[in-house]
Image (tube, rainbow, N blue to C red; front, top):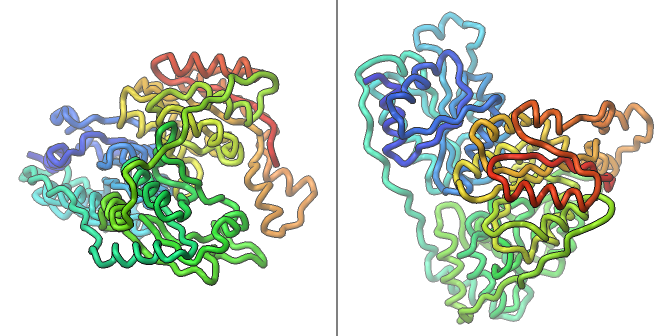
Length: 517
């Protein structure tokens, strides 16, 4: 058996059965082996950033890794931004990067590069396979490393001769990850602090923001009167009617600092102490109040939901965590704005939907109207590197067939990975893309003032304007195989959204809306 087939059979045996691929010459034996290993689903993408973002979305919805197959160092480099986001998502990802045959590297061919150095920026585990015989064991180790705990990006570098040579065999699947229990003494110590009458907060992230963790945290808050917060950009947030509501920390540092002001204790559950996204003249980077002590309840290799449940029991919390009431806004009418788009989404969001949110500035109007919609999952831009929303929607749709995915996408961000639409069409994924087009980098217009830059001239403004010429997203979508429309009013948008949600396969609705900046 050649190395490529042994690698694929090991991956499938380890529960990894989806590969998002943008292959090249060095990966041709991997591609050919897909015919021999039919259990592995190969999903072709047109850009490496789509492959890496899709593995992130897939892992968010399954807790298990998919594979991103990339071509040499430049291919890995093209996928790096969404591997950065995946690293910040703290989800399991396996990246297989093909390389030149081992004997060819010394000739310094045109595509030769230092793959390890590129991978080191985003990977918690890196290995170069030496021989065909190592492909099976190395693949098993890559899956084990990706799963953790904690989960991480694992990068396996596969030389072409290790892939095409004989003498390989599949390896046994690695054991499933085991997350540890937080010691009872630590739970009791935190419980005592929560009972002492001081103002306390609990910041939730990662696994704490799925249903089990949310319900335990809500029990604690109801019993002790503490404040609950969520990370600004959570990996996966369970929300909607019947689920406990938790307020996300604002993106704007001054608002987040104000939200935390007065806290005396802040405990972290699979989250990091909050800091501002950027440095701003005269403003603090660390957002925790000076008088506030920060402690860690659980994270990393800990069983986070179990720790929250143990803490709820330790403070004698009741069993009823409560939840958001069922409520929907009316179908909107009149002018098409980001606000009326949010109202339409709240009126129509289906039960068990998955929302991939990269709406950026327009996104502030999306969360309020959907708070009382049927239960759904909300995925956000974890690492801040734009171009994540459409690939994450691809991965989520592959991971959860039967669930409608709604990609809320800003126009500027969409252009980074617009190739995602082609994969949606080819795979006939149930994705509704709501393309919010204000024809400018609105977030940067806001940041221009916040960092103290003084610019009012045409040259500076031109750097933040993507409306000259206007980009025709309907034409782009249709050219990539996705049906598309551009409604002109709120009523027309709502009708188009209703149609899309009821129609199998992908579609795009371009909503041209006024910018709020």
